Image (cartoon, rainbow, N blue to C red; front, side, top):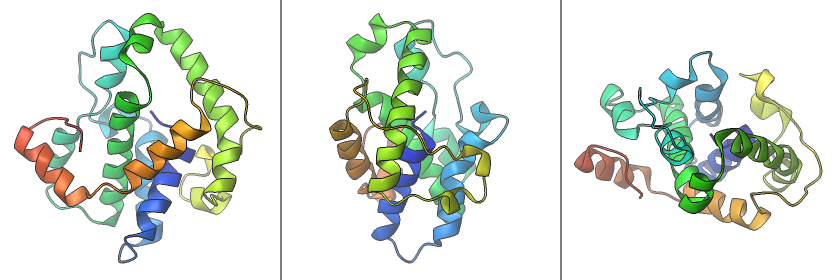
Length: 185
């Protein structure tokens, strides 16, 4: 449940090191899971997600199920998989368990979307994201507002973008398949 802008920043940085991939297809795949009507299906969301905020947000994505249904990843599916990896790690790495357990889901969503609104402009400028990057899903575009202090600092988000965009997806896929479930890289 990272923002579209965070997803695009990660995809663009990933593509810098993987020039053999088709830019437009990876970008389209990156935006696809959140742009569809049935995002629970495109995220391979668990049917029962728990009652507390922590288990609810951390069961949003099932990487192993995605890989089981998609044995071969074309450029679009690489973008889709990168989106799912981002969402999985976003809740694992950007928020503490204590914060997620002690914050109601409604308060968390309010604070999260406030952060997205106030990070988008910064991220769009830093990672050279343009409206053209949203051409397959124009309704996902939102320029954002000037940065304000929020639950996600610029430094946290930049470090997260750098880390996720540098994951060796081939090795990570093997690790997920071996565990037969979500696991950190």
